[in-house]
Amino acid sequence: MKFTPYSLFAITSTLLLGLGTIFASRTFDIILHDSFYVIGYLPISISFSLISGLMALIYFVLKKQENV
Image 1 (cartoon, rainbow, N blue to C red):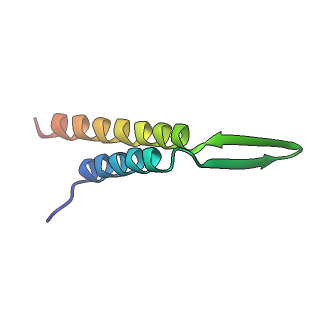
Image 2: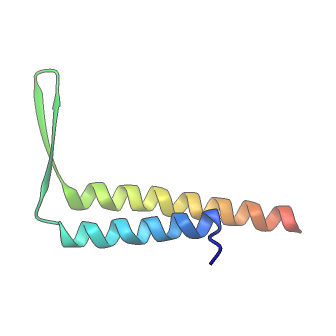
């Protein structure tokens, strides 16, 4: 089975959304200088999956325009 880059981005975004819903109750702790930030896992996974999905869409559109 041959994977194209945009299909790998799409698979990655799907996996991130799935893991985000499974581990929604977990938190991600960030210590930056003297501040302590606690972020839920779900918003992080949603943002990374959106970025990955947009990259897949941009790559797919550019690849289609190149072949025309």
